[in-house]
Length: 251
Picture 1 (cartoon, rainbow, N blue to C red):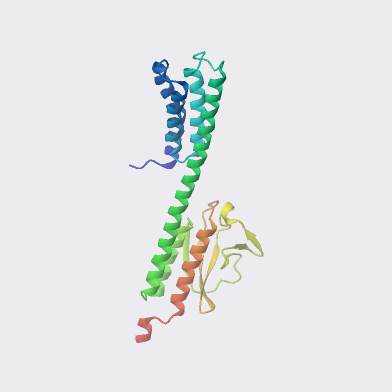
Picture 2: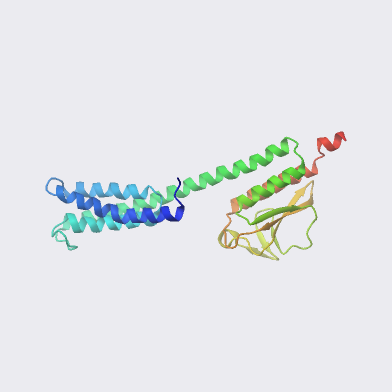
């Protein structure tokens, strides 16, 4: 069973705080046989394990927890946050720095993985629509498919296609991906799509053949790449509508 993202985030942060403390407590029994550097390396492994979650904030918590636990449990005077040895101070400082660097690298890696997965998803959506158009599917069915794909892609409440050209729509998505509110551009990648209706034109053979009416989810940020994919799918529909359909020609 998959864990919901908010719950997963909380569990990772709890682990980030608790694991270094628990591990340091276990290392107390080996203080006489392990050097300070070896103990610090073991704690670094715990920080790396937490950082592998890809949550920068959790990695930061783990780094500070590991440094504080190392100071409290494993440096003289024990069970105190005082540091009397310069070497122990340097070791603790390096432990903290390494933990913070690892956390940043893990967070960047997670962002790259998410971006890669999103790019593959966008490509598959576009490919699905292109396959329908290339296969000569009825424009009505292509329109329904594109509407469903755009609704999921942009996290919309609703998306529907109309053949009529709307009279002076207030909010539009331009061919270059710019969201326009009248004469002003709108930052959809930070603010999400505005108002209750956003129009995305469907063009083919050099003219407008209809439009998608988008009902946004308020405050849901939309990246520029996703807007461009939505435009490309609308253009695929326009190409299908502008091309004589085989069934219509035979009739």
